[in-house]
Image (cartoon, rainbow, N blue to C red):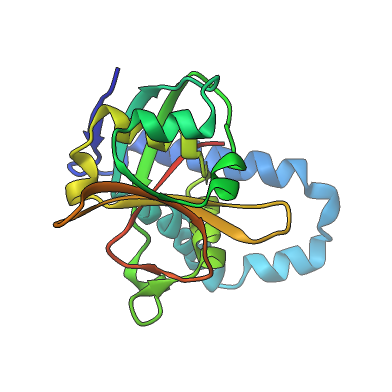
Length: 210
């Protein structure tokens, strides 16, 4: 079972959504009211940049999820990591130790969100795993190699135009990764390894909702 939903053509934010945003902000202030003193709070309320700073944070989060591809997949978490890779039918370039440590994740019915970070976070066309993790956090997503592999199993051609990957840390704190792509010579492949290299800006990254 799989759906692809490009979130491209969206209507503008509605009045109801604005009302909800204001209500959420008010509820949060009420919840934390004991943490703010009245006099300094009044000074801050008089600062014109307060509203623009708040809108900037909101805008940054909206823009972060405005270019997504969503896949709905049914994940078999009982498979071993090697079985997950084998099911994709792709040529494998892997480290067996890293494969065995691949996180299985949770949930049978999963929506996988594929995204590309904004170009502004890349340095010379590259993004580090540490920065990539921040991009997951920004979108309220978590890496889920099993669901991403399942999405690529269901649609082997997806990685032809959308090379995609994700990462996780091993017990020693080193970044590991899984990546799906296509070479002209070897065809479609999956790569699982431990690597300190940064990601190029053509990669898409997959994750599940937290």
